[in-house]
Each structure stands twice: as structure tokens, then as C-alpha cells.
Image (cartoon, rainbow, N blue to C red):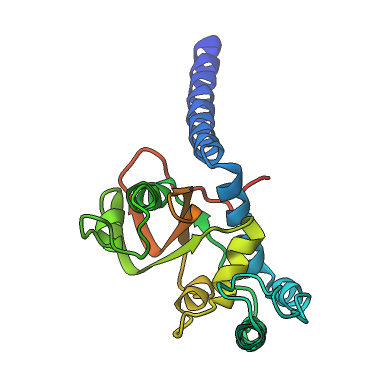
Length: 231
């Protein structure tokens, strides 16, 4: 009788251990499916939201920009450099105006699948923008993989030179009058993010970041409930 009870307890513990291990394995597998660039972009976004003063310092370190050396600017001349300098100061002010750390994000494999759909579709055709070649919208792409309530948003970066540059371009948001990428990146409502990068026939590479305030994953891979993915 004692042996039987002991065996039952061991079986229950083994079952719990197996379930926990399976969950951890699924999360690790999802994280490992990220490319190095996607992985690093997530970590840069996480650092920005967790430590805005650090990123304010990174932006300030860009001062001054000599003519012809301002990053993320399509035309290099004195006028555009002066405009970019004002844009840089504006970005610094936006980050410094944050009241504190923003809520950190959970990586969602399904939101990444929605982002990947847009990368494959528009990248292979040399298209830009948030509408797919078939007219699909962000909400339609996300709803292929799960349900959402509240708010969703999408940022797209073309030809980033690296993960930090991808975030830098979104914060600077040069030549985007409403600074929509910056506002999206610094929005406190987000809880989940998916990231996908891939080839673009015109810009070489593009990265799509899909955000959601509340998202219910319909697939077998749950959001990674971690504030930071390991490098």
C-alpha cells in the first residue's frame, strides 16, 4: 500500500514535470525560430521600453551630424541634414518625455507569422506599405492566426543596417509627417509583438513588427511570457 501511494505520487509529479518541460520546449523552439536579426530587434525594442533614458543617451550620442553623414535620410544635402537634426531633437524629446519605463512586451510567434506573411508578399514584389498585394490589411493578416481586441499596430523598416538601426529609424521617423512609427513604438498599450525580417527586391531587406494590446493565439505556440529573449 505504501509503495502504491508512493508510485501514484511519483506519477503525478512526473506528469507535471512533463507538461512543464513540454511548455518550456515549445517556448524555446519558438524563440529559436527567430533569425539573429529578428532576435536582436526584439531585444533593442525591449531595452528601449524598459530603459528609455538609455535610448535617449544613444540618440544624443548622434549629435552632431555633419552634412552627408546623417543616417536614415534618402537625400544627403545641407537642407535635409538640418531637417534631420531637428527630427533627431524631436525624437530625443519624445523619449525623454516618457514618464518612466513602458510595459515590456511578450514575443508572439503567431504575430510573427502574420508579419512574415507581409514580408513574403510585399518583399518578393518590391512593394512598400501596410496593404498586401491582394489588398489584405493588418487586421486580416493577424486574424489568420488569432483573435485580438483593443488595439493593433504595425511598423515596417526597409534596409536597416542592423537591429539598433532598425529601432533608430522608427524613432527618428524621418520624412513621416505624423511620426506614426515613433508613436507606435512608444505606445504603452502594447502587450505582444511579433517580428519578421526577410528579403526585399528593392531595399534588400525589410522588417515588420506587429503589435497588439490583447491577443488570443489560436496556434499551438503560446506567446513567450518573458520580458527579454536571450541573445
